[in-house]
Image (cartoon, rainbow, N blue to C red; front, side, top):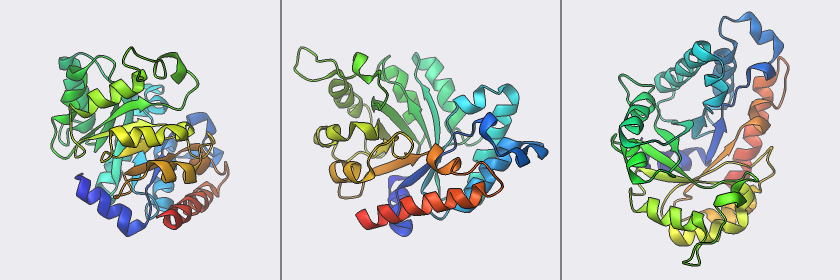
Length: 273
C-alpha cells in the first residue's frame, strides 16, 4: 500500500486506529471452539465488526507461531481474508525480524511477497544488526519496514535509553541512522505510547515518517498525549490497540463489544483530528 492510500483511508474513516489481532488461543470465547479453526473465526468476526473503524490490522506472530502449523494456517487465512475483502486496509505482520542480509531477504519474501508469501503490507523489524538486516524489507514496491525505535516495555531502559558519547540516547542514534536507509514512503517507526514525553524528540528527528504506536489501551498509554506530541501535518500516526478491543468480552457478544471499544477510540481520534 502506498503512503497516499494510507493517508486517504485515515481521512475517509477519520481514524488512525490499528487493531492488534493478538488472538491468544486460551482466551477465545468458548463457543468458538465448535469451529474447525476457532482463531480464524475469531479474527474474521472481529474484522467484520470493526473494519469500517480501523485503517490497519496487526497480527502478532507469537500468538500464531506458538501453535505450530495450525497457527500459521490461521494467520494465512486471516491475511488472505483481509486482502480479498478489504484490500484498502493496511496489514502489518508484527514479526520483529532482523538477521543477516540473505536471511532477512527470506523473511521479507515470507511476509511481504504477494505470490509466494503472505502478502502483508508491512512487517516490524529489529534494526540491531544494521542496514543489511533491514534493507531487504524495503525491496518490495509499496511495502514497508516498520523499525523498532523506542519501545514501551520496562526493559527499554536497558539499552534504548542509555546515553552515547555524542550526548544522544541509543534510540536517537538508531532512529537517525535507520531513517537514512529508507524514506517516509517505505519506512515507519515503532514508538511506544507510554513514552509520550519522548514524542517531541522523535518528531524532531523524523518529522515526516509514520509512527506505529502500541501501548494505548490495556498498557495505559494516553491517546491525547500521543496525538498532541506525535502527530504531523498528515497525522502520521497509526495507534494500535489489541487486548482492550478484541477481548472486551469473552462471551458470545465479543464481536459487538469489540466494535463498541473500537468505536469509542475512533470517535476520540476524530475529535482529536
